[in-house]
Length: 68
Image 1 (cartoon, one colour):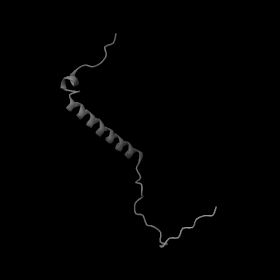
Image 2 (cartoon, one colour; image 1 turned 90 degrees about the vertical axis):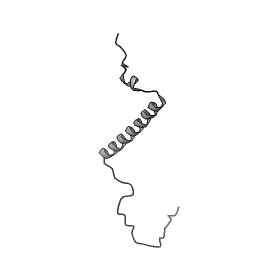
Image 3 (cartoon, one colour; image 1 turned 120 degrees about the vertical axis):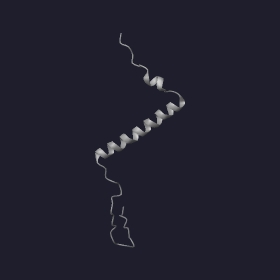
Image 4 (cartoon, one colour; image 1 turned 180 degrees about the horizontal axis):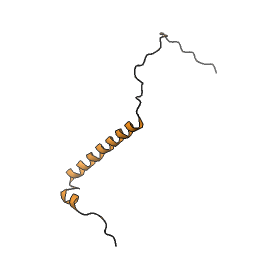
């Protein structure tokens, strides 16, 4: 199988000022994921509040299972 040769009209190298994929540190990624999940939980909690599945009475109620 012969190798394909590619011919370009312009032989100048491409100058990239920023990487195509941004570099994130592990701490930055953790913070980004944490903020995303917090937003998702807040949306669900607000939806439960609007639907009446949670209320002030439920939030103040003791929900732990008693020990025997």
